[in-house]
Image (cartoon, rainbow, N blue to C red; front, side, top):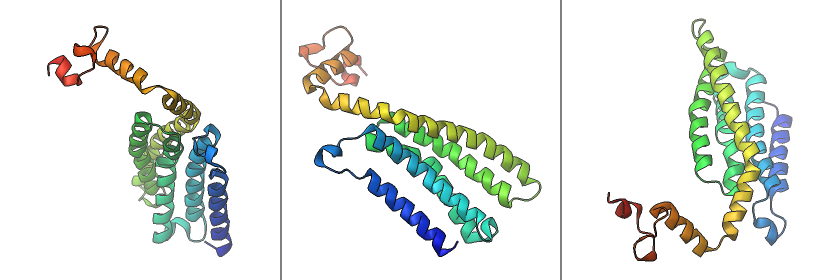
Length: 194
């Protein structure tokens, strides 16, 4: 890859990072637009970088370029969409989609490797893995990126709730409609007798 192309990618990453940096103390709260842009940039930039590494020069025939390209594509497709959700304060949903994308992204990268450098017998299997893994990884990534603004709204609502109100909700969730013993929620295992 030429120096000019490396500089272009470095400047694009720097511009994305500077564009997402909070400007004031009040901007430290998660912003839906920043969260969505962060997830999109963390997905698109590494994938584009990996694709350009595989396409430039000797491309996928060079071992170092092949490894760097596939690694960059894997990082962008697996971890990228989750960055916006983590910035937004997501919880279990982000972990679930990250683990699913790890599985499907692994299939995608394996399929891409077999397609680019596999033997004649391995190429059809590589294409199948690439299509199945790629479609599911893309669907999960798009879901995470589109869901990010609602995660920010949920985090803001959680931050505005009174802790006493949350305690009351917790007691209803643990004890059901019957009040908990001594008016306070006990541990779930103690209440259920486990």
